[in-house]
Image 1 (cartoon, rainbow, N blue to C red):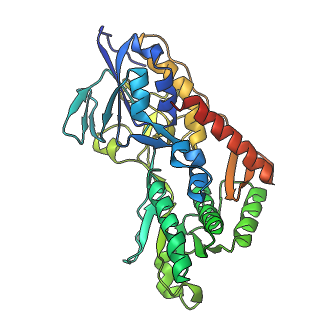
Image 2: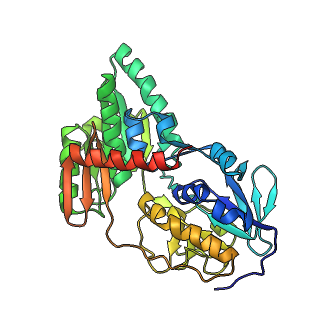
Image 3: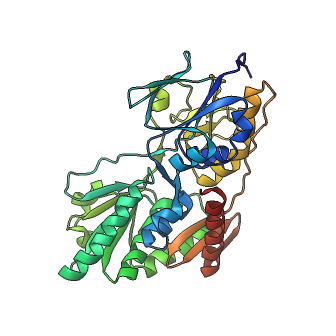
Length: 379
């Protein structure tokens, strides 16, 4: 681990307003005696992923699940810059932003999440929405509200395909169904998974509960298939001969091209490679957390918000310790973690190791955890 000589006027730049940086910002006084702090993020509001499906369903408002980054910065005396970092010069220690400005740093922390892959779909006139970045869900919610009025007046059906049978795809499928039920209109929803089954990283019991929930909701599941196969398989799927009105992209995540474009050290999938201190393996003045990183000690760690939350106190401590030229704290990832999948109508599936429970109680637990998180960090 290498350290630079510290000057009295250090600059700490936080890039992205994800879970880990929200925590750092609320405890920024630990760092402000050591450095001037800047936050750079493309959107003023950062949505909380844990409540995203509930927002789509209509349980929560946007205000209940959003962090106002500019307001937090104002309250915490952090310099707020709205923009997207498009290049990092690690040698000169400068970031370039799409507003045309450059900003030097002494320490840089990245919490920018991951992106959704662009599948090669046939050209069509349907609306396509990626579940990441989460700000896209505001557009989805508005579209569903508009569909509620249109489908009831015209007595037609909103045909929807959700691509990806992971947690996000399952939650979004059921959230759209629940939103339609709440508003009294009829959707036609198809969930597509290219592999043999959904929720590959979950227990058999959790998968069973999810399959039952999809069946009861009338969501048509197509495994080992994709929309690109549709023309050849239409005779086997007569209900798919009409084009979709809406396609939700919840396919696998991919790393931001910012890292490769900036010549930072990445793993085989393009994620920022960090050591057990959440510190870049080749650029010691750069740290990272959340979905955008790959730990050399745990390269297969899932891309889930729970990990960014657990990394938060270690990131804060190590930014402070690096500025103070002290030894850094080692982050050790727990192998078992609690996951609660929302399944619509205020029900959920709780998955923790071999334990799997479905029904109202898991959703009540999830709602309690999520609302407590928001109360803790919203300003």
